[in-house]
Each structure stands twice: as structure tokens, then as C-alpha cells.
Length: 294
View 1 (cartoon, rainbow, N blue to C red):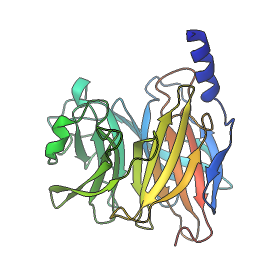
View 2: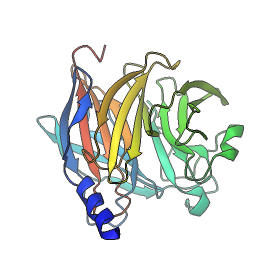
View 3: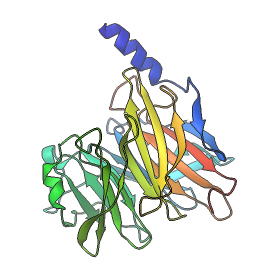
View 4: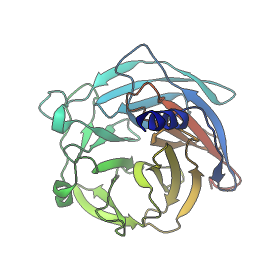
């Protein structure tokens, strides 16, 4: 039985095997597998791409942050160079470790400030300098009751610097996912996202269109399937842009939505390989055209 499960997981982690459902105007624009001779590369839980599509920030769930350049040909990713690799720190300057680790959500503000959400000790931290200590932010009272493996998985920041974070689990199958908002150092719940099937939130971003994009994941037992929905910032006008079948992609956990001047709206998604030899740090991109970027 274990051999069968391993074989099926290997199959699900390979190149795309099955079809998927795309909204009108959405198309896949490329796929790239990131690999380096570096044991710290893996467990990717977040990614941010610059507006010109040529720079990236990526986050591992083990507290490592990567920054560098994106190489493209014909718009598709062909390589990533590494300018900086750094391990995150807590506010006292020591490295994240144990309960203070498990970095899951990534958001980069317009001024370059990096924000990270954590599951181990549920919190959001700010890094004016990613090589320096974290800057403490307030914590919502709900954070204390969140399970260590179901807390603040997704994080996004809008053009005004307001932060939005979503836990991976809501507590019950019939309970919506709260979207917590930090504005003027005060947390509230901006809106709630209804649960739809067995998908769970794993990544978020606010696009240049001002809409909230949510990446969701479902493990079916033989592999992963993914979904991207987007909402207005009051939770209305929900729209499903992408839903894959099992095995189409690996364990997608991070999402960045960006748009180069004159270009289409692009979603860049990155997979967490769980540091397993049979999974990949896969990066896939989807473009949104036919007026969806308006």
C-alpha cells in the first residue's frame, strides 16, 4: 500500500497530466522548475513578482527569503538568478526557529517593505530590511486560538499598505474563512470567504486591478489540485478564474498578480516541494485577457 501511495504521489508531482477549468480569457503562459545545488531551496510558500516581471521575492516555509532576477524569453520564465538569500529573524534579532518559524504568507508593499505571516506562532511581521530583525505588529485576539498548522497561511497588501491575511482553516467545514485586515494598527475582519468544496486557502495577493486574489489547494490523496478565486475587497463579486484537476501542477502555495505596462494581467504561482525528491519547486504563470484586467 505504501508503494502504491508513493507511486501515485510521484505521478501527481510530475509534469501536467490532466486538464483544468479556466475562465474565459485565462490561459497558461508558461511553466518553469526551479532547481539549485542548495539544500535550503525548497518549501516555497510565497512569491512576489515586480510590475515589470523581472524581479522576484520568494519565501520558504522554513524562514528563508530569496530575492533576485527573473530571466524570460518571449515572456516565459527561463531562469532565476539569486541576488540574496537570508534567514528571517524575530524582533530580538535571533533567527526564526521552532514555534517562531513556519513562514507561510508573503506580501511586498509598494515601497519594498516585506511582510510575512506565520503559522507556528500566528502573527504577521514586517521587515523594512529583510536581513535585519522583524518589526512587531499587533495581533488579533483570534490568532491565539488558531492551530499551529492551520493559522495565517495567506497574506496580501494593498496600495495603501493595508494588510490582509487568511487562515488555512476556519474551524468547521461550514464556517467561512475570515479575512483579517490590519489598518492604522487595528485589526478587524474585512469580509469572509465562503467555503466551497474541500479547498483551503494557501496564498493571496491584491492585483493592480484592486481585487483580492485567493489561491486555494486541495490534497486529494493522490496529488494536489488548485483553484484561484478573486473578490472585491468587501467580499463581493466572487469569480473563479482557475481550477485544476489532480496532478496538473504540484503543491501550489504562493501567488503574485502583476501587470507590466501595456501587458496582460499575470498570475505567477509557486509550488512547495515539501523538501521531497519526488516533488518540484514549480513556477507556473497564467495570463488574464479579454477585459478581465480592466
